[in-house]
Image (tube, rainbow, N blue to C red):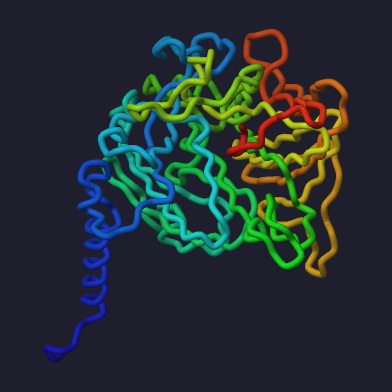
Length: 422
């Protein structure tokens, strides 16, 4: 073989070396929080910056020997790990969020065709520093994702402790999705590394014959218009798993037995508590007023609206059980499922009215209801009709996946939403 030729093995070796160099020199930032700007050079800032870590939350009830966890600092009860939104924080503040995860993961949204950069920083764990787990971000349901940015570690990049990676997306399909860590995904999903993401349609800016407004999809006829919106993230927890995970004990996944059911990371009656107060000066979350135990569960599920308003429920299930959510006394119109408009290929309307929405694991549903006419404030329950999910362990009374829809008379002065779930 001449000196100008290269063997197949040599070519593969060179390609592997180049790829490894790119991964360590460009894709995975060596220090995601200190001097990150210098490492990135001219890279554009992320649309969303997520930090992966562990921490403590508060779940109701009592399970002998495992819940509440005696190691939990007051007022918390339960260990887990997940993500925090650190987009606006300084490098020093980001590092300080180690041990302060949020349940569920932060809800975020982008516009159709918006160039989107999601940076993931792995801060490591406080309670289990022996765990060297990497993490990823998998945008569940994203069509034709570039493998490098799909977050499946077998096909792309997993982010080790102390490193960061930026995912790039250009979403073309509006609707409601979810995201989660795909590294050891059974455990990481169960522990809380899951959340809602949705894509707003171009039609929001207006289209021929359609004024600007709030729409779920590019429907062309305003059939998915709405006034207010709530994301409802359905999940469950197995308290034995949480306890044994914190105490370096093994558990058998074939014995999975969830005993706490949640909407947006909370169980009733905590689902009715207000949303969190945002981020404080030091970068930590501010607890909802009067609810210090919900500091790291900041998303409220209480729905408030006025008669005649159209309300969008973005229902997402990323647990391991099937759920059927029922809205008592108010019909809902299902206008989309899994980020797909309910319309046939020939344009036939496939939306339908129902009072109960069935959602399997890994599925999402977009449902709109019109708030009924009332002359005085009225309350309607939104709940899981499976009886086993309507209680908290060891505690009498209603609990689990339940919240309220509070309808006020038209003209009551309820201010417009500034963000979902407000």
